[in-house]
Length: 297
Image 1 (tube, rainbow, N blue to C red):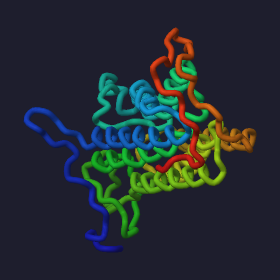
Image 2 (image 1 turned 45 degrees about the vertical axis):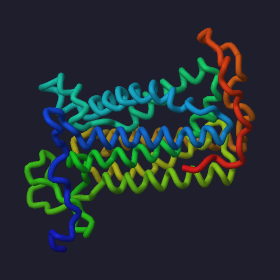
Image 3 (image 1 turned 60 degrees about the vertical axis):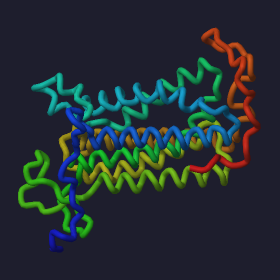
């Protein structure tokens, strides 16, 4: 067994105080991820012919719904800690956001708003896909600071040290699989592959987003199998694994059915076009011609 000094240490704290105000690493990780996702999405949306600010506008609606969906998914799939204290389900800052619920909540909110504004939904999803993967990667740092969602014990040199009094700690275990790190690296790889495929094959109609979902689900399937935190189990598999299996199958099916779908010629309504909510784009610049690549990530 390697010496303890070879293991990856966990942060000694995840909260700092500026006067009476707490500064939480978990929240900072999520906020940083969201900012990066918006910046990347804006650049890629512009490369597709969209106007600046659209991704930011939709994010202001999609992100809150995503957080609500993420928390609801976590509480439903891991209800144990909240049965005796239901109010604690509202304490998002203590950790516990289910990414599948976050993706679903944010996606549905953005879908509705994009539809009302006449925005090409598939093109928008394709533009933001790599940024979402990057946001997920950065957000996993919050799990590291909170010492949560780690894997089973391991003697690998990159094993993660966890405080012995952690409720999920295993007696006599010295280190655990750093599943937060596995998923962080996997998500960065997903973002890179999606950008490459988008440029190489000029994906359109939501195919880049479907590729992101398929790759993310494939990675989450095996990473989830390493985790030892409390979670619902069905037929020997964690509930998240079943969900990821469904997502993977659906995304692959979408890619097969929509194979060959090219980029959209126009991703936003013309200036002055009346929208479903009675407003218009008067005074905004007309969408620019899309560029040849999918925009850098």
